[in-house]
Amino acid sequence: MPLFLLPDLGDLLRLSPQYNAATLVEVARQLGAARLLWLSGPDPDHPARDSFGAARLSTTDLAPDWAFAEAEYQQLLEFMPQYPQGRQRLKAAAAAESELADLLQTPMTFEKVTAPETLELTRRYHTALAESLGEGPGTRHHARRLDELAQSLQDQRGVALAALDDLPGLLERLPQAALPDLPNFQPGEASRLRALADRAGQLREDDDLNALIAALGRETGDAITPLSELDYHAAGIFLATGDLENARSLLEKSAHGLSDLPRSLPGLVLARLGQVRDAQQDRDLARRSYQAVLALNFAPEVARETAKAGMETAFVMEAER
Image (tube, rainbow, N blue to C red; front, side, top):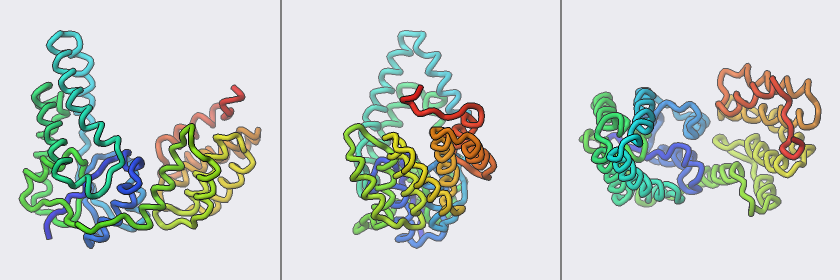
């Protein structure tokens, strides 16, 4: 069995109805994977960490923490604009990044992320970046990082999740690596349900909120996107419209239905429940909700920050400020 490299989009998975965190599980299962190698960075809030855990797919993290490279890159961005040549180089790098960003802002599919033209675009991006800023801090040490990552993968087989723009470099360095060959793959029910939840978490001004609430209410959930999460998103819509009673009712229902998986959900539900209780001037219960978030072994950063802020100052609806 080769080492199949599964393309990862990070947080952008939430924007693609047909290539989201549940789709990764569906692809991994079609490949027969019981575990995955994680090559996509240390972000604890990555959406696929929830989906893999909820699907009982174990992961082995092989990605080194290269936070220093990001810090060096940011320092370079502060330094180069001070010089005319530096500004020209940054402009060239921005043009290369813009082409890749335009691609990633469109909804992706499995066919699209594995297409030769997509890989060629990412290859051009890294080539242009190295030519403009030089290999090193300007590329976040991309070549060096891939060299080290490839070295750790020499004897590995199975399925590995890797950042989309790392794929060309890894394929060049790993003779046993290949993209998944699933010409007839179609996203399944898990992808559809995950897409609905992702969409409900990204409200827009022109949304038909009643239709969204109705769509969420028709579903019963699954392991990756459980009913408690669907209720959480429906409650978020009610909260956005100022309907605190329905928001609280759904959040309390969601809280009673929580389990350990997906691991980010308890923190999100309890933090929002605290905000709704605060908005209804139920400060004691609000504080208990925030305290529950802070007592969890894991909570997403946004939930933990919400809870910390709520412990200090009662949440107030925007219109009341």
